Image 1 (cartoon, protein in one colour):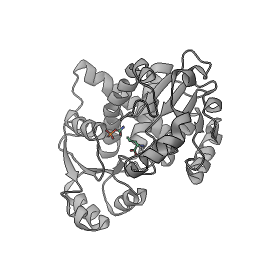
Image 2 (tube, protein in one colour):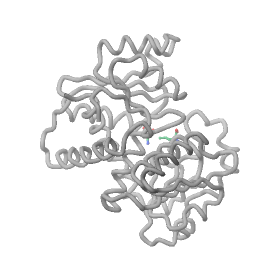
Image 3 (tube, rainbow, N blue to C red):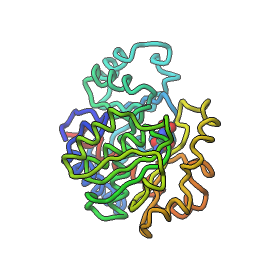
Length: 311
Ligand code: CP
Ligand code: NVA
């Protein structure tokens, strides 16, 4: 990966970039476990702009910077002048004078693109309404731990809302040659332009990206089933209406069995809403995978930061 580059979308990364991130994440995870120092970002500072809530992303980026020998600043938009209307392009140019990297979680993806355009330092997308690349890269690391390093040819099925996670998982799967099938209700499909981009990447790696409405069809032969909340941040007012529409998309024991694969695993980026997108029993059965997935945010983001902010 090129030092100084932004990480806004997995679609912008090469297959080699993805491999480099995962390999370094594995190395940093092993070092962390063994207590071997890996101070790759000594003296560096990351600014973390949050316009939405977070547990995992905030804590894992902040702790990750400390473990790499640097420091992190939590910048809530409630406190920044950004929250009072200072333009994002001015915020970008000011923060570039103080920091070595910016991580941002916001609503419109175009805000992240604008920040990146005006910042002289690397910008990392920590979730927008459109994409959540750090989570999907983390999911690839977790799948490697459970299914082996060779991801090409595996099948991931996503069941639920066609949201930021669907988009980034589709990009991630296509980049590494994993087949991807999404089942979403009518009116909640992933964006057509993202599906088209993912299909172009899939053509290069010999994999497929399919979108459909039938969850039973999507999970057939799946090695991994993934779901996510039915109402993402910013969609709280739609919660009840969505719950009615999404009911047939709940990841239950019978849906997992419909994969026909006794070794199929279930993943969830969290936070999870039991009784909605996933049943309590499926969540608890796959809790070891799901909490490894949560832990791996730390290792993957450390790798990303070390690669784009290091040197
Ligand atoms: N999965 C994830 O991004 O979690 P947070 O919203 O807690 O950061
Ligand atoms: N789709 C969810 C992911 C949360 C990590 C959201 O955007 O709220």
